[in-house]
Image 1 (cartoon, rainbow over the protein chains, first blue to last red):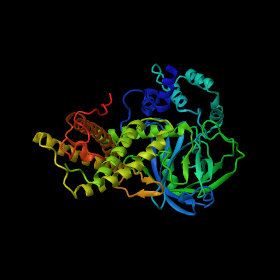
Image 2: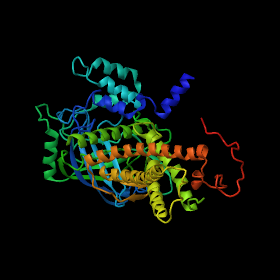
Image 3: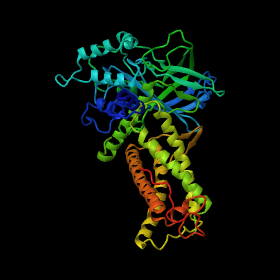
Image 4: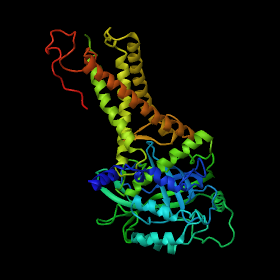
Length: 326
Length: 195
């Protein structure tokens, strides 16, 4: 009886544990927000803009208009992981690219991509546990390596993520970094045929490792602006097509490298400006804002991301309204 | 004893169903991360567009006739309150889809129903989104409270006063005290109110 009730509560999402605000509370350290008005995750960033130039090669897979040969305007944001808008950029463990592509008919595709190709875990509950394990220890102000090790020990599904982490070397720029959509989505063509995909943004700029010397806090922003002064920066949107049996609803499990890929087009960024007062600051890069022809998979973390992003947006919008935060 | 025209009665009960669906969806989907919440939000938006169309239709329709008068057994102050509460309901039914729509503009988001996109009501602005987002929630709780009062009053007329006021919005046979030959003897058993 009690188990049944607990199961029902979990399925419906009653109880504090099943609320997006519980995850966002953990992200902001449990108490009052440290940085009112800013995103609770990936707080530090730079507004960018440009266009998406479709190759036309993905038009057979999805009826979304932006895949048909042509151009669509892009508004985006380059950022680093973490909840502080003043953290040093270059040394951040995670870098991100978020985009909002607007079709001619007004439909939008928003995406938030990170450097890791996979997540460490496959469920919102486990992700929340991971956040707790990585939270700073009140005693030292730093994450406790023993707790993190214990977390990974308890989650063998994190093997792919740990392998990526072990082999990751930070580059010297947002421009020569590859970003990943991580969770799977489903492309739907005009006939209703469904094709699960994941994608990566593959940079045109060649990889240069991050130097060992001292970096200013805004090293990445500054470097990005300098590159843009020399011309546009480009990435190829590379779709990876799942085959039957590939895990579609678990962001921790990668698909084999041998899977067919389709280059859907090029993201070309031509301008950047500070996020304070910038046109990307008020945008929520909710990965479930999709045009017709792209649908979410059943990956529970993908849906939890939508909920957590919405809660983060609501909080910072309220703070901005009440305290005139940025 | 007059009744609301058939068009108004049909719109009233269609809106009632839609409204309860919207309030339930809204309350249950916000701040939850279960997979079902994504289609729930899509449905909420599609229903919101439908609600706006219906409420505009209803308002236009409402201005074509005079409401059936309330019996004189009801004190003048109560009659005035009833009238005011009806217009407040109209106001909220209009304000909720409008704040929902405006909220999207303030977040820079299109309102999409299938392949159809509504024009943005305003430019993206974080503070304005904050205002509209909170307003949308408060108005919804206000509407929920008003709907409960409204339904309570309607049932009070139907079961306690039995003064025919409920029949203004009902279908089928009238059971009003002052209607033509009563089919039911006074005080005949009726369905008791649910407990």
